[in-house]
Every structure is written in C-alpha cells, then in structure tokens.
Length: 480
Ligand code: FHN
Image (tube, rainbow, N blue to C red; front, side, top):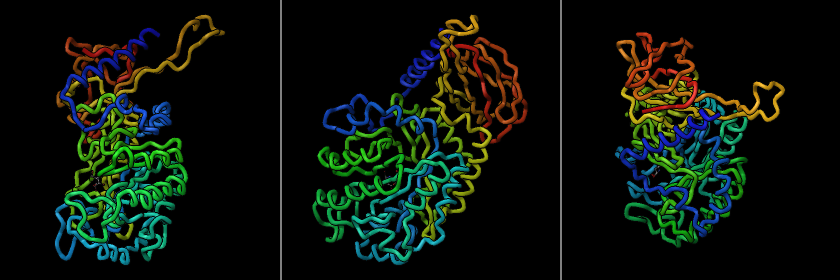
C-alpha cells in the first residue's frame, strides 16, 4: 500500500516538476482556479462535476473534427482565383456579398453524404468522438434550424439534416458527438461579427445583441435540444463576447448536464472545461489543465480542391502519441466535399492510424503524461497504479489489512529504434515486473545501470513509425 502511495505521489510530483521546470507555454488560457468567479453561473452549476464529466474525454485522447459547410462548393476558388487562406474563410477573404454567397446553397446537394460510413471511419481509426461544425462563420446552419431558414434543410436541394443523421449513427455505433458553433462571427445574419476589418456588405449591419438573441441563442438551444446527447459544445472566435453576452448562453448549457465545452465562448477564455491549442502541440503540455490540440491534415479546415499538402500518416500518428505523452487530446480534422465525401487522402491516413491503434491503442487510451523530461528515442505515456480494492474482513487472514492494486505501467513509444539492440530509459530506477513488446508480447530482458534502465530489444522495429514497449513496474516509479 505504501509503495502505491509513493508511486502515485512520485508521479504527480515528478510530472509537475518536470513540466513546470521547462519553458512555460502561454495559450492565453486560465487555470480552473481563476475561473471560479461568481459571475459565471455555469462554473457554479457544473464545477463540482467537472472531473466526472471529463472522465470519458480524458480516456478518449483522439477525436475527429469535421469542418463542413456551403464553402465546400467553391472549394477554395473564387471567380477563377485560388485562395491562399483556409477554405471556410472564402466569403470574408473575397468580401463576397451576402446574397451572392448565399446563392451557392442552390448548388449544395451532398447526396453522397453517409453518416454511418463517416462514423465507421472515425471509429475504425481509433477515434472516440466527433465534433462537427453546426454553423461556421459564414452563418450557414448545417442542421434544420427553425431560428433561421439559412440552413441546409430549408435552403438547399439536399433537404436532409446531416446532424440528425450523424447523431443517429453515433448512437448506433457508440461514439460521442459534439457540435462546433460559431457564436459571435456570423457573416450572413445582420449584427453578426466579422473579424479582420469588419462588415463589407450593408446587409450585415445590425445589432450584435439582436443577432445573439434571435439567431445564436435559439440555434444553440436547438442543437442542445433536438439531437439527443451532446458530448461537446465547441465554441469559436469569441469576438466581442463580453461577460454580459456570455450570460445569454450559459443557462442553455443545463440542457445537457454532461456537456463539455471548450474555452472559446468568452473573449477572456474564462469559461470551459478544456483549452484549445490550434495547429500546434504545446512543448510541455499544459500542466494543470485539460487541453485538446485541433489540427488539419493539410492546410485547410474546410475542403479546398487544390490543397494537396498532406501531412504523412506517420507524422499524424506521432502527433497523436506526442500529445498523449503530454496529457492532451488530438482533434484531427477532415473537410468533406460538397458531395459529402471525406477526401481520399484523409481516409487513407485515418485507416493507417487505425491499423496502428488496433495494435497499440492501450498505450494511448486512458493514459496520462510522461514522467520523463526528454527521451531521445521517442515518447512515453503512463497508466498510474491504482488501489482497486481494500480487504476489510478477509476470509484469508494473509490478506488482512491489504489492498489490491493495478501496477503502474509505462508505455515507451519508440520512434527511433536503437541500432545496437539497447534501449536506455534514462533515469528510470524502478524495479520492473515485466518488459514486453506490445505488438507480439515478446519478453525483453533488462539490466539496471547508473544512468537508467537498459532494455535489450530485437534488431528490427515492429513498426517503422512507432513501436511500443510495455514496462510494468513492481512498485514505485522512480525517475532520477
Ligand atoms: O476561424 C476558425 C477556423 O476557420 C477554424 O474553424 C478553426 C478551428 O479551430 N478555428 C478558428 C480559428 O481559430
């Protein structure tokens, strides 16, 4: 029992020391303790259950972001010119008049959209949740909204509600569903905000508060009421979102008592369950915070027909491992076409990640950050030893006063396989129970050295991108 307590304490203090000793990362996010101010009702109503609500999310580690909207019709091209910016910003980048952009809805008929196939792809790639754009900055709702007819059901020939179909498919296949909603920026409805220089069409002029009261708040009520359980509400670009405006949304969150929200509702990032580094992985994670890196596979969120600058599946996989080793989640984006299809290169990459996850998933799901500062050959994820059962009046006297526990496990993710057959885990002093290759269960021999634990490994790596060595400890984790 003592050794377990030592283990747990050691891990917490070691991780905290190592992570805080390194260069701090400023994401603009605040710690939870700063957020518990009386003006934020949501924190008071939900704060106590934060850890319970976060449990599945912390286990999940990997999710799918879907940026899909009417911008997939122009697909990054406007009047023959290829946009250099992200595809979903086309309307603002080209200052397209509201009516002209809205006319694109007539061509938006994604008849190949198949919610079950998308959910299956996400699931097979090892993802545990999906977050889809219900309304992006262009103001177009991807669901059947009664608050505005500028939506996919009423304004396109498609006449279907993809969010309803996705919600059903997610329920059927046991994957969690979340909605992205651009609460402040809305380039279509009068009064909606526009970044980078503001409105360009008189049709956009109007009162911000009227827009919030008539469009954004009712639409958020709709997505939280009409689609069953909503796991995540993913706000974005909180332009001019003062605390007074934030308060218009907070009561709605009670519609989904288990809801998680990100930290982009208010302009000061004072609310929310997790932080959201975008297109980057914080060098040392974000100690003391839950966080999720969202990232594109190429250079755009919304589909662009000519963006072929894809990250390799190996790089994406190593990103996932890197993020898990720093205690975060990875929300990896796909941008479906105007037909409703996820582009082939995205599918191929997700399938490759899925193949790796089938073998190595236990080294990602439910893990916590690495206790090591730096590992020259790769990364480490951890499963802390836990006391699982205390025997109070045992039939077997030898069990008296004892507790049972699961051992602490280190998952070593080897990016650069050693050429000389020796893998040094620097500073590891713990006694080991077993050391194995995850891919085939091969037992590996070890020898303690003054500078750490030396593990003998075969000459060939089981996986060229990342091979996993599972180190089960006997007792306390000791890292020097
Ligand atoms: O402006 C958006 C962008 O289009 C995209 O949705 C990303 C995803 O995190 N968020 C915003 C920029 O921070």
